[in-house]
Image (tube, rainbow, N blue to C red; front, side, top):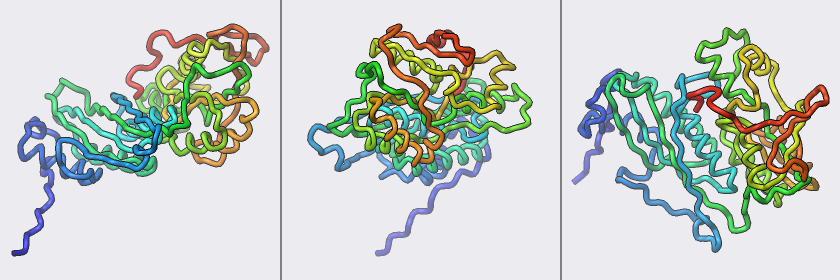
Length: 348
């Protein structure tokens, strides 16, 4: 007897209602139509059952990370909350030397959200996941009443595998090691400011949101003694450098004239009294490598789309341990401290 294929479920509403979180038909329609039809997870069980050859390599370690995303607005030039959720989790794994493999995605959705926007977010997530070479394999949805949330919040978790010979730790940075960033700074923070209508800009500044795992693999191959990598997200480059200086008990010196900044971003910061060193990035990292491997690391970065604007910005030093210092364009020295307070909320 021939089995009739089950027809795919479809959402008939235009906006999210409380029924879409009630566990019944409306919820099932939402999950299958908007999410699983796009992510194509392996089955519809309450957990993903996974295996990869990388896990079986003797000495390999699993890497696991989780993060929540509440960016406002949810869509902006260069990305949206879905793209950030995927890229942010992939990058947290990648900067630790892991090869990202699988992601989960949990959604808290406010009643009244346009389902069309949910479709755009899901499509954006799948596109970013495909670019990064990872799979979204499981997830969850919850609906809260109107006024109890703010659009869509997303929590993503990621699992990757660290090869036996990789051990990237901030504490391994040594005096003389060179600091390299893969691209311009502050684009994401400026893009969010512009998207909120805080600035009437004649030039659109897109977010730098992008996955960095392929870039990291290129750097690891070219500079096998790489010490550490950090993505400069909330708190910007300044906070990432301070964390490294503190862990390694070294000083870090950077040059103001070496920092890659767009003229538009500089202008936004000057008008609003912001420091671009503290602006968030969603596709920018800093790596420390031995001086004799710096050129190889730069060449590897330049060969990747995410690293074409890579430059050396400074080095680690024995002087002023646990302190980041910037040589200004006027020849003076300025301490670059950890971010105090919140320069820009709801940034990711």
